[in-house]
Image (cartoon, rainbow, N blue to C red; front, side, top):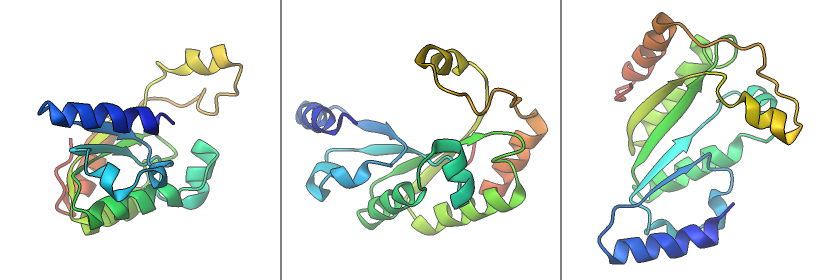
Length: 161
């Protein structure tokens, strides 16, 4: 939501020879022009879910915008590190991970996948904002589930950690 500031900051950073990286869910990626995207050396793109209904359940928003942003970055060969939050009972199904890993592999510009085990450390933010926290009862995944998901991404030729 701070795209104008980020563009100015990244332009100045690049002029000083500083590598730039943007961490985003991609929802507002259409706000950036192709020229502005050239100021970004790396995009850390967090895709919350592949399944449209699950994405809407988790974020309240349609999941097409992040996927379209990923396709656009691929068309420009902009490097992506895909970030995937692993929530047991929601984003850990074989079908969900397989679909996302195939998509990521087909893009051709995903340099790595960070499988991020869910945790409850952000719960207080929701409470402070007075918002309903849909993941209140979610538990962190086991090490075995994290490794299975990493293997699913690796089976499509992606470096997953």
